[in-house]
Image (cartoon, rainbow, N blue to C red; front, side):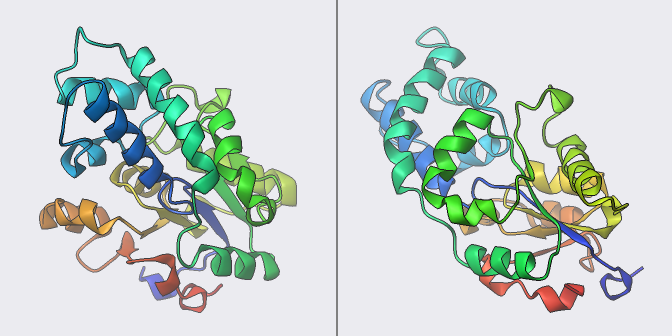
Length: 246
């Protein structure tokens, strides 16, 4: 079945690095801590950052500890507390990424079901979206956060968060939309993998820095030689809903 043969009925969205420029906040917060407290002048580099994408907070902090040989100097919980405090100072300035508002407004106006499926816990979700209420109100409460007990220890790259998001949509609307009838929007490789596993067609909008250090063989494996699993866009400004029957 080609992409032209598939009928898409719903859109499921990651948030960090896809809807919001929160990845910049993460980079600044980790770099500040690494440079000023642990004397790592290079800060958070992209080869490490790509390994953090899609990971829950404490798990991401443990990965930083491992990559920067900080074992014995701090714990994952302590590093999480340090970076969280710095992030709280920065969240008010976090911006919406290009093409996001236009796309979400379009989908909402067409009554196409949409849902946010983010690894961020609910408290972080509230902080990040506080200054973008009008945008996130368009999701009509369809939000799955990483601390949802239904998906405990089942985060990306596992597919469960997307299935749960689709379940929420179907229950609310009384529909029976299938995973293969969903477009899944992601920026990070773990999310792309989870979207594929869920059965959706992935719209991958990676940071160019991350894409540059990803082997072409891995990119091809993720989206398929003929884009049978997904497509790569530079920004959501490039996304054309009508191409997917939306």
